[in-house]
Length: 207
Image (cartoon, rainbow, N blue to C red; front, side, top):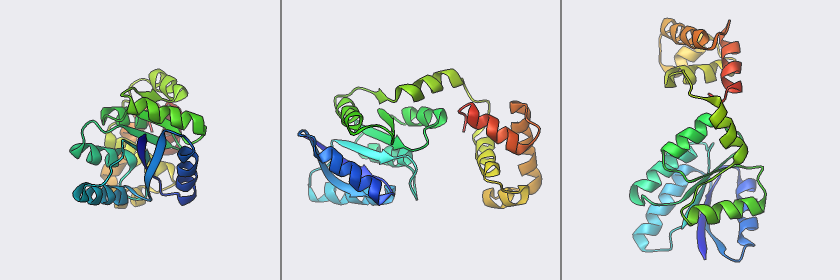
């Protein structure tokens, strides 16, 4: 029997996935959590009391607090060989590369079927990687991003329609410094403005 935990801040998605996976003869869901913080607290309590810990953790990438990859990193601090499957509605090459760097073995879109989820869980439990083929191909073709982490952060905020002043306030930077970072990103992407830079970076899989 493979014991699972599921963490997703969309309650309906989490409960539906738990129900579907529980129909598999060899899978048992131990807990469903709504945030990374809740998952970490549950793990600590269970570990302290000597309870059954998951063999595989299924984590949503986008969570309200710390995200799925950061949650995986913290879980693996105490259990270095813990198999983790990241699921997401918005898979991008940058996120896959970050997940792999953190030791995550599986990466799957939420559009996957219940059978694909079960196969992915069995694969990472057995010590094998399971990466969505389309995302893997996109990651290979996207190449390395020339953007720095700070430039990526500012472009993401620009893509939400924020002004330079609003972006500066959110990132605790001076407006002039913010403009310089955005200008550097625009130059690297050959874009005329920050919105065009954001769009190109998204199309290339760098955001």
